[in-house]
Image (cartoon, rainbow, N blue to C red; front, top):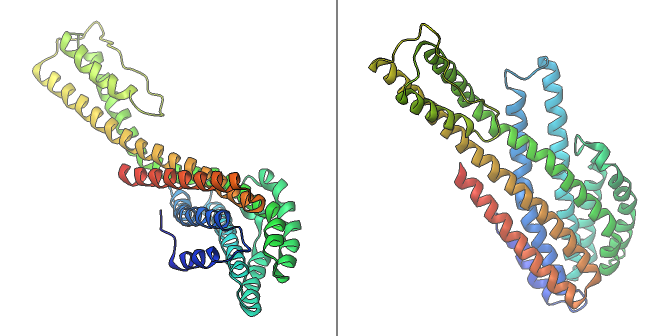
Length: 339
């Protein structure tokens, strides 16, 4: 996770000195969103690369034109998601300007940028699961005018109150969209398992051929046990166990036969180990998204606490975002370690 940028840190110091702004809850919200933004940028950019990788896979169905269109639609949705994150960041800059008592010209400059971002944001493209995002789109569009009006009048408290519904709507859409990002990135990781899965299938076919030709002996049973243990250890693939199937013409295994089966058992174990090592990355990636969504919820709660501004709410919000930030950072570190 990236640290809070220098400009935001300075803004927090300025806000702390302003007696008309709920300091603790405002700083908690800004810091909570800072962590979310850093991770969102990373996840959306990585998802764009993953979408390109998935579209270029030779086994993917569809014509070149169809795959290109799907890729362009996905990339457009990803760009919109990132724009939504940046929109909240721009809005935060306006709040900081209001809270720190900047000049009318400074606030107007930030407001102009916010208005430009709002006009270019197309939330209909943010996810392929548009029907789930539907309830929030109207809330966001209706709330935009309220936010703009209160910011123009330089009323911090009113700007925060007006932004409650649209801000919550955007965060909820980002939470929904996180499932789409997760699927993209997990698919991209899982494709690295395909060669090992094919190898295990190939080794299994060669072991089966040997089993049909050889009588079952304790040595063969032991080697077959190694092969089957490796096969059934695969994390999310269904692989059946092999069984002795010697025919009437089966012969007793020679040293060369046992050596060949020993090699096949070792190869199967190695392929299964490599497959499962990649699966650890899949689990780590899913953990990152689990904590990312928790962090988004924490940001939503800290923004609500900013409006309520009760002593208990400030404490709970601060404690909440700190814990979520730690969990998200730990999940990201585990993902890097799993590579």
